[in-house]
View 1: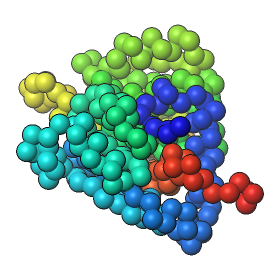
View 2: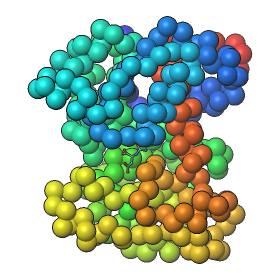
View 3: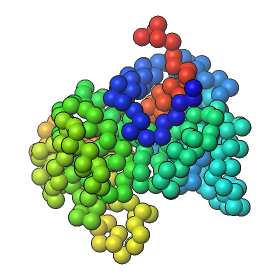
Length: 311
Ligand code: NCD
């Protein structure tokens, strides 16, 4: 049966851990070994919304596995601009590709694509809903830095209302043992209630806070997010909150040596460039891990994992 990756909610903890292990395995392989895994296979990247990291890391992942890539990076360059339906686009692309990564501004489009398509669909972000491949790479990054996810104190900062990276990450962190999440956001950009309620059934906890400085003192890592301008129904509201948080190197003085700053990127001005040269900056390594995790995901969904005997 074909397998898709549409929502982090579709994955049990064991499947998440399995992806982390597979990514570690892929990372340890030589370039030549990797390049022999998917010769002749084709990934289609259908991006109806802007992207740098997600699309290019998917494409680099496929190329480095020996496969090839087709696709478009904006709806205007596809027949969508002529009025073609999303379903017809998917039905067409599945004739050409073995696997499809799709990003779309509307929530639920990846699920729709998965229902229609005979080939595996990967959700590369659907509106403000979910971004499961980002979550897997975030967890991979966290485990690489800390050796574990259980028991960590994590500050989630910025646009908790509209960030799909946050929505997926929170759901996944609730599956781990004793993770404590400090939620730092403007009043109008709080984490949605349905996610707050999900904590009731978990050993992980949520705590709301207004102070980034306090969160830095109390946590092991901070996950910053961009205020998602494109999701605001009214830009007047965006103007009010757009500069709510700005992390700079001075604010990190006194944090423990192991403290890390993560961000799915792109940043606008929520992390000052002077943080980049501190030992706490983890976001570019995080972006690199995106390529590795996406290799693991493509290999899994195409049922082409490297032979287990070499582990
Ligand atoms: C994020 C996204 O598109 O949701 N970016 C990414 O995929 N790395 C975050 C954002 O756009 O702010």
